[in-house]
Image (cartoon, rainbow, N blue to C red; front, side, top):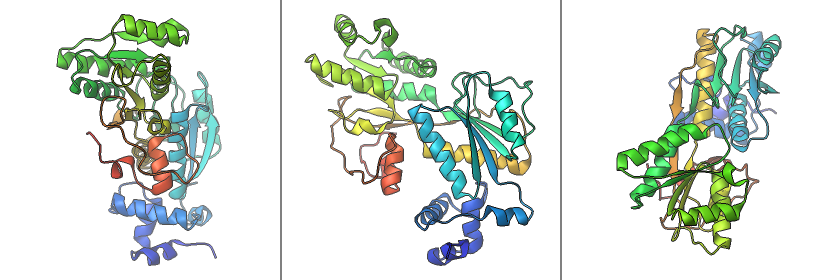
Length: 359
């Protein structure tokens, strides 16, 4: 027999109405976030399948959300997967399409023609102008690369936290290693702010200047006497760490490194890589809550609330902090994202396990 909301309510010792609010609510109900997470966890374990057809017969909406998302970007894919999971746990069907530059209005209209009751646009290049012919539906822009979003991780704070942590270790100069990417400018602003507050200096070193040549890059770092570096993403930091080690340059003794994004492999480098984690679950949850609120209140069109989720520093040994071996070993195939891996395997966040958190 299929699992029902009544079954979940009996197992948890709460009312069926509370279960319904946790699974189908828009985030504004009186059910606490902790209770909602427990209900959703039990629903996943019991393979609860929401009966969207029954709800539609009771006069509800289509319970279908359209998502436009790019493919092939690791962090984007993780946020997208978390958004889909939250929507499905709340009895919504998800209709997804890839998007590319210049296609946004027509793709949104295609989703609207399929009867979706709201649209989430993830990681588009530019925020469209408010005069563009978009469908008359609630729309949330999540993590727009250039321009503003309705909701995003605080990219400027990302650069600030990583740089300030190195400065707190006593380094008088922190350089910025920039890769190819549209998020670098705001992370660079955070790097500059941390340096200005500390009265420190640093240079921007761009990977594009060296065409991927590790030997030339390392030669530049040695010539400039670089001792501490904030890297614009974890991939760059981890590859640099490997190249430095092959050249006999020690991390962190000779050069201290901090990355950002929070990918799974940061636990498995030698030493483990300190990184500024971009929260996935909180970003996805607030994105969904924002859209469901707009659906409920009939708020349509391009709004751009500019809400930001603060990142969090995860400490490894690459910055000069005490290195540590992984405290938990994954049992399931990983998704490539540190926070998501902990939630997938253990239903906790990394900061509930690791005692070396810095706010």
